[in-house]
Length: 638
Image (cartoon, rainbow, N blue to C red):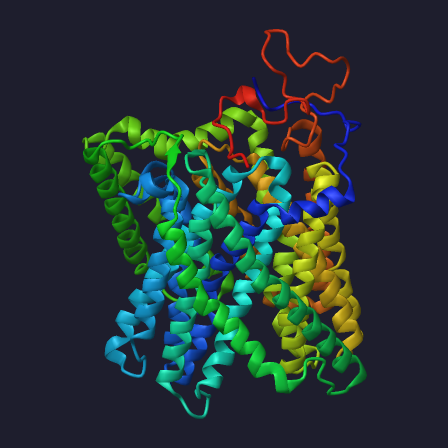
């Protein structure tokens, strides 16, 4: 049965009270996703902003510093090795923890190792820069792998009706993790004695050691959580682990939320009234810092208990690769393919000279990337053809996930892919140049940091929670429509700011509403992508969707500076508003013709009480929201 049907606009909307929608955030799986999101948000800034500042303080040239950002290329190409996550077991760990948690723990341990390796090198010595760069590459690869598995875990752990809540919690945790690894790391480095005027390797080393210790919270969460599509044999152990975990989570989240709200009030109040009142007395700040550091220090002890008290499980998913021989062959196939991609990327790049033209540089990099992908695919196909790996195994891993998507949605899959590629285009393109815009509007770095890095982040969190609630009370595509509309309309506030440069009230109005809209749109869009993903190919399909999601906005965002230089800021923000309008039409067409998620009526027909179709099989309606005739394995239950 095809999932592609014409859905009348008057389909019934599932009813859910406000209390039920808000209560969903207290669901155990939602709390687990908050902390897994935190674990995913830690590594990225340890490669980008925090590492860049460390290297600059160490006296490394700016050109070398920016090259370290290449360590995060794994995020852009994670779809290449995502099939390995779906197909390969982790020796010993998969039988003990299950398919998803085994890979999450593996990636988290690699992240910790990479952070410790980076901390062990002093970049002042040029001879160790290559080792530090290799450690950064390991961190980028491990972090991207963690993202792949956590996305798959989130989709498999709960039905589509709960995905908006899980998406909102994941995004909230991710942003909090970025604050800790960004602002938190800079604060620690300064506290330990490293400044721009006086560089201290020991200060940065200790900072990264603490960041490695903070990752133990993510590992603890993984051991305390459920394993999707698995039967728990020792339920009492699982319940005890979860009970202790939620006590620990409460000790972190509740005081942390109070601290965040008070800090928000303090910053907004002082900026608007030009005062220096401390809502949180400075005298108690050492005690507050000690409290949170003590909780982080307790995480390894609680983790040890969870490891000892880990319940036995029976995995319910058969893996594609079952024999040791097939395992080795697939790993070798993947290794040779990646090596060929890297070699082709380097060789093709040598044929292009550096150009000052943005357009020519973009074309050259596009040719370089596409050429490298063609070479990698050709090498992979050739090695499979000569028998390095079994054709049926390679087909199941790399071809079937893509074929499944087009089989389920047919020609309308192209419409879905277009919507995925363009949904976030309005706010992402505007965000590319936002910091430069604030500086050009005569705001200081402190004013920008207070408004964007703290108030803006907190508003994005609030928007994410609001999106998670409303997506439960309305049809998913209606929430998508609202998110897209808010994302493009709020860009008009920046036009207003261009006529009031230096005005903090106008700046805060724009930042608050824009981040609320961005948080809302992010939460419902992640739920949308999750609903599109088949849980037979979770890791592969979602990694493809998430990579496609940022491709067009990043490409277009690269021209934002040129647009501003030639046309000015008012035109640019009007442009970002205008490019968001066609997205509304795409959402309407998708909602009209394609079933997305199980909170939509599959046929738009509520007549009658029979839950079966003409061939006697269950119909895909709200009466049967699990889409049981897709023959997909069931998601995890509570």
